[in-house]
Image (cartoon, rainbow, N blue to C red):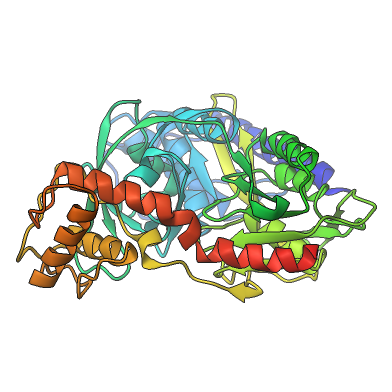
Length: 482
């Protein structure tokens, strides 16, 4: 029995169970005696409703509903209680990837993998009860605001997100295009929280970006695996081949993952000799092996990963590494080794739950471990430094995170600020003056909007050459091409 068939059987049984529980429940109430409102119940009320296939513990659920319906001081809508019961059941599992979604939340979730949606553009997860950024989406407001993988969300518009489910937190962060959301983050290495005012926008559909680098080395960046990603990847790969591509760098840094089918299709044109792409193990321990359809030899390939690469990105990296014998470069990935599916109810609400674990071609489960690169290469600090917001004023003797960003940017550009701890010293002032002079700006030693724009542009212009991970990838793949 294949995995897809098993999933649909699971769905059919699940809906049957829910339907049976509702019909049994109403039949029981029709025959049960009403409890007097003024009397205290001293003996447990045993309500035999579970029936064949149900654990006896289910009796508590129906009994609780009966007491609330008959004795609670106010009327409580049944749909509210049912939603709460389902949510509580899923929360009790303790899996951050298993959740209940209201019709509105379900619609937003579908948009995030099938079409555009409005928000800040950042993939988040729950880690130890806290909302954590997996990665911002390329070109989205979150990335432009300097949100980084690993940032923890503390508050949204002044309200704490502690204790919220992943879906509840996402719905607070999302909102209509043009609206501003104020998010407070906690970042590793920063004592004080970082506050970002982010203007929401429509998050673009494009997930594949390709370019030809020197020596006919192609580079394809995949920002997430959506429904159209595999087709776009094939188009860009063919275009690069027509241009005479000799080797390929696939960049899945800051890629939070996405649809399993999408990464499987991409693997069909990258993993040679019908190599294993991944193994899927269901709750019974039964495994399904998914292989590439490519019969022949592959092209020289290198994969880039980082701590924002998760799920489908890790599947691709592991397949390239273990089945293709290709090199993976960067830093250790997130470590998400589970597979989820969704099931929709008649009212449009959905449950998203984990149905399997995925294993690497060699049978390794990387959950909470991640993919270890063949070459561990870190990026310069400027790549993970927040941009200085527009209209920020900085001068001698200031001490804050914006000054620290200024110092890191100046040092990256070759102007020595003397320190990078956030204190605006005289040496930092001189380094800024030297930069201003190099850009033919007023040498005030203080930050203005013109200085911020010039700094940002100078850093952006230098990133490709400063991308140590990309430079290592070029070095490695050129050795394969020769």
